[in-house]
Length: 235
Image (cartoon, rainbow, N blue to C red):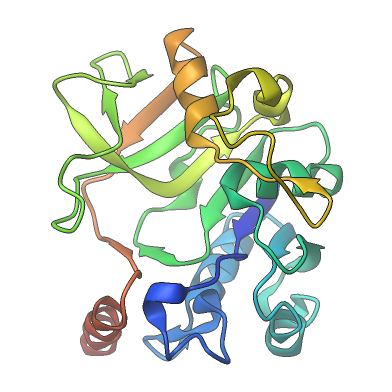
């Protein structure tokens, strides 16, 4: 299995910390956020990792190299000067990922979720790890039912953790399901969000999920990074 790490965001809410350092390279607990993911991937024998980049892209190979010191091999999927959003970023990386299901993790989250818990293949087109809605976004993203399927709406609304398992075929008909911005191109490449595509396939019962009750942080502000750093250093 290969893995994709989303690392192309501008990190605007993290300024000035991200003026010279991409958000996934910011440190918490003595190591870069993305390093936590690389070590966990190596621990479950995922050796081929694609890192998508945009903002301050050269900093990633400068810091991470080819991934050898983490026990993985990294290939970089450069999106261009403008990030392509989640859907466009995934589409841009697909040539490096192949035809098999791949593990996806956002480079700006931290969690104690064990990647080994993920199924080897999703039963549909995607399997998402969900967490309790954080205080800064209490409405949640999707609803998880008792059969482990995700829906646009429902009684048990949870937040997508940024960790999941995807089939490349999820994007086979991306033009059909993308939102009003689907026609926008950046750097000569399609730029679109993944969420509308996931919702469309949820309607067909093709997106499953699981609830993670453990620790998870969306490192979206300097304060949350500072809090995470303190927690990890005191553990």
